[in-house]
Length: 119
Image (cartoon, rainbow, N blue to C red; front, side, top):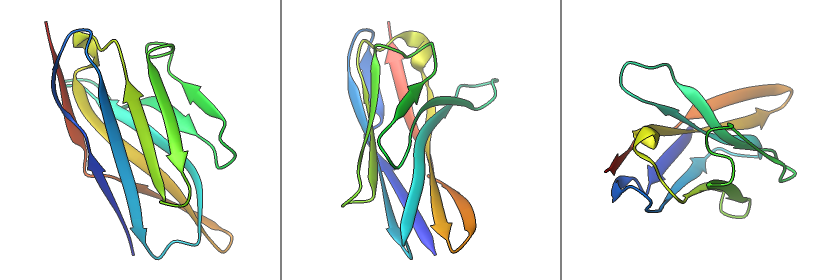
């Protein structure tokens, strides 16, 4: 059993910054990719950023240059540093972690954390 605990969401003004964290715990032998997604009201969940086990990061065009994803493998934790936040970044942010078990890859989702950017 694997649990993901997210933290760091909140209310921030336009142009502000927030840092999200997602810590994985439980029966973990090897973590593959880790990522952040978001879902705004009335919209589909979308990929924000993903980082591979080797540290390669990719971003949605809408957040490039503003958001930075990182991971601490010793702590099984992924971070999302969000700078220059805009009102359109308002959404529930979810982390997703791919965990290898033998030849199988299982995806686990965090519970979501609300990020609200006010003008």
